[in-house]
Amino acid sequence: MSAHNTQDIIDYYDQAHFHFRYGWDLDKSMAIHYGFWRKDTRNFRQSLYHCNLELSLFGGIKKGQKILDAGCGVGGSSIFLAKEYQCKVTGISLSSKQVAVALENAAKYHDVTDLLDFQVMDYTRTTFPDESFDIIWALESLVHALDKEAFFKEANRILKPGGKIVIADLFQSRKDADPHEDELIRKMLHPVAIPGMIRISELENIINVNGMQNLEYRNVTPNIVLTAKRMYFGSFIFALLNKSYRFFHSGTGRFAANHHQYPYYQYLTLKRGLWNYYFVSCEKIQSARYSQLL
Image (cartoon, rainbow, N blue to C red; front, side, top):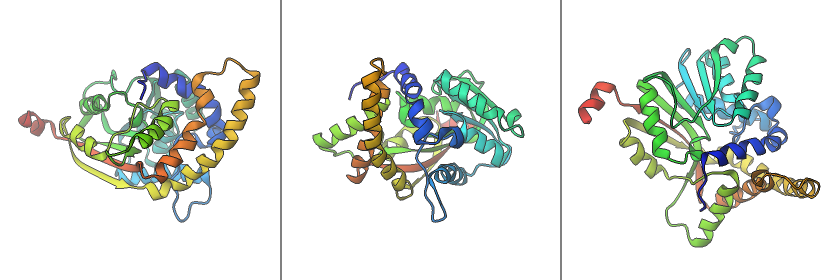
């Protein structure tokens, strides 16, 4: 799999913003992630809200906590956490375009505007003081980390003792994929600037060496399948529209030109059981105890 860099991730989200705006009803949903379908979920926009709600319940979010939304997109999760839990939320993204949109979105919610802050920053190298946050929230952002361990190392630094990381993301399900399956995964991930997925077993090793404990995870793949199917069927429409657009606009960026490949291949690989969608949480070891372990 070809390597990506930080600029690739920025370019992907900047170039794909138009696709998300219409495919995800971005102006209203403010969400760029899989929807969580419950028995009472009526439509796609509600499934996006339910993803935030279910992840917050899984992570045990409490009223008034100080939260870092690591990879905040256009601010939807941050606004949700501020509105539903009155948390003080700082959202960070590599993309200045996303941060600008997040600030515009936050300005619409006058009752929680003072609880929200958005900044351009790399979540593996933040400028926050030690022990700044109660929670680090990562909704489909860990998968973009070029160095997954660097994410947890920095999280350990800026979390308060006993603080938690709360994650929803894609994880590779097995180690023994054959060459054809590896190629399908490459075709899925490369067009959206994802360097690679890790397995839950790898995640456990990473948190153990980076001051974390009490790993909990829940496979919620059945709850995101409808979104995966929706994306798959939508990929054919996007491919046709994209082909027409490129005919008249020769300067289309490479990520915008190939973005339709992810919705197609994510469903093929999901049906083959090559990845699953998990909710994950872990806690920072209390400082004194961690010092003794070191």
